Image (cartoon, rainbow, N blue to C red):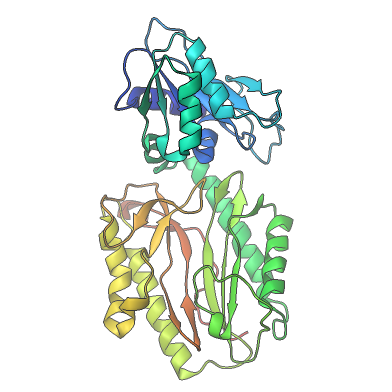
Length: 376
């Protein structure tokens, strides 16, 4: 992967910063961006890309608060990087990186202002007082949008792990168990199947709590006739999947449950089918949102019906009514509309997919747990 990471850094250098000038060094601090450019890195690391001018020495330096573990499950640090481990406890990698830039032949330092607190930005200015500071903006995030096949392979494994964990849970006895217990069991099963851990806090909702996005599990016990909604994801080598399903517990579903489920399912299917290269983000969102809006649930819908996934669970692109931009091939996204009826419960269905052209079969579905309304 060293060649891959080096190519990513070269592309970033070519993009530069809007306000950079002369021999510009680039300081990357956002954790997912550092990982994208450097491989499996310790938490709190910062990456300094040496000056871009041909006459200046180019050296890419990874500054870490602790030594990389070399754990292959986390991915290895790019071996072509120079790694500096800070000796002082509590030292800031970003500030140390800016200090190194000041000691180089750079005359400009491009930073990720959106990732820096005011205090941290002032600290950078203090140690790099002679350098002109410019903003990199979200250049790295834009580069991360389209995934290569190795990244997609990691997402595919993460999705398979989530499918396996949920499938095993559904084979167990659920009535009488608490939401909290089910969430803990899902997290254990994710790890048992090879996940780094849960991609985000697992949500389990039963009865009146079902269908709530991001519902924190409680001590409410599963009862006969409940809707049970589950949202989970696995992390695998830094890449994160998302899977959401809704079931009925222990009996045949009521008519209102069937009707609500079929409505949300049709909305989710419409969103999935709209995922094609060149489709506008807001058009994909509209495909899913319109069906629920027409049925009278527009006021309950979340700001977006889906989002990108990768090294972060909730990243660009956003599938929302006001989002600007168009999908590219090989962009992984989620589609997850839902409806919650206060006091009764609701339905949420979430999938992780990869945008593919129609000639390649259209959207690639990574999370394959059945979307049939099962009575468990």
